[in-house]
Length: 396
Ligand SMILES: Nc1ncnc2c1ncn2[C@@H]1O[C@H](COP(=O)(O)OP(=O)(O)O)[C@@H](O)[C@H]1O
Ligand SMILES: [Mg+2]
Image 1: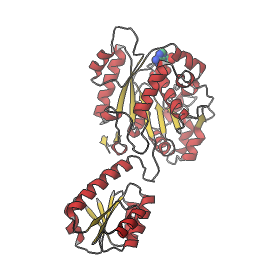
Image 2: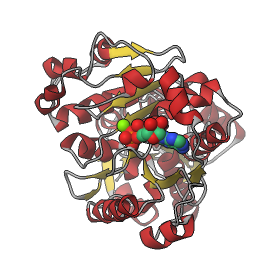
Image 3: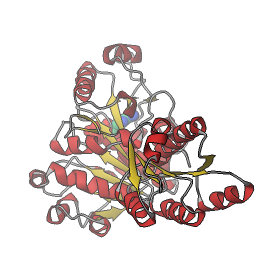
Image 4: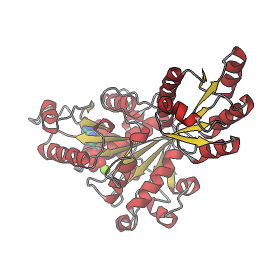
């Protein structure tokens, strides 16, 4: 829907075609300011009879409150003075009021830009972090290895990162990083419905890499007391305060895992070269398809890709009917690093396993500055507003 601020009650009809028909009229500056704050409409067109100062005031307000909203200004005459003033106020386009073709073009450009900006900005106007969930329906394939290494690598690069352990009964993120958590995910229970940044920070334990860890409860039975909705709530809060939220998972579609999928921008699915793991991955991919999870928001990583076990990576690709994004070799250095409690990417950066984990982070997890688009190519291009919802059984 486009907000149209004009004095002329017939202008809605005049511009309907150029604006795509769906118009919500506003009458004055106060109403315009209110609707831009209250609505999520991506475009405001200001008619030719609205005075220049009010139009600029509104645009300046929009720039702060709703950076993704585009403002297009129509004038009877466009001159350098008008353009200069509009530019300073952050108005995206100034067009002559009778140039309806130009207006249609300007609307299209502005909506495109808004979509890009919205992909990077929350309702509150702050940049949103990316939620990346590492999953496999089979245990022992490398989920915890990947999530701890990804988290520690991203944190060591200066990003603000939270690693949440959703293997709530048997999570071993804390022990893998040699942390002794004072608090854990069970402390969220008391905050249900009102989790905020402070509450979240009270449950995290800091790792020396700079990574924040939300550890699994020390009591396995606490897992049942943590509702899936609480996990979703905590993740939504977390993404407003972290650049990345990496989620480690148990080997099952638990309600906690489903809640994480629901808000994730990227799923990293782990395959290994054994028939049960490949079968489980195929079933997981089918389940994700059924749930409406977009294929563009998943990558499959083959762990221990060089194991000589009679099954080849081509066999895996054929069985799961999806490309493998990154191959991580097998090495005794991996369990050795876990036993030392130091992620291998930090401890042995030149190791081939570290190289592969960095490739995964750099190509698929990281986002390019200013674009909101992930660095990944054909595989992973999740758009923020394209998050899918289990609750609604499809894309939001
Ligand atoms: N690329 C690898 N090479 C050798 N061992 C690995 C590799 N990746 C994981 N491992 C080992 O496999 C075991 C299971 O890994 P883990 O990350 O705990 O799996 P999950 O979290 O999926 O259960 C660990 O002992 C880990 O050290
Ligand atoms: Mg694990």
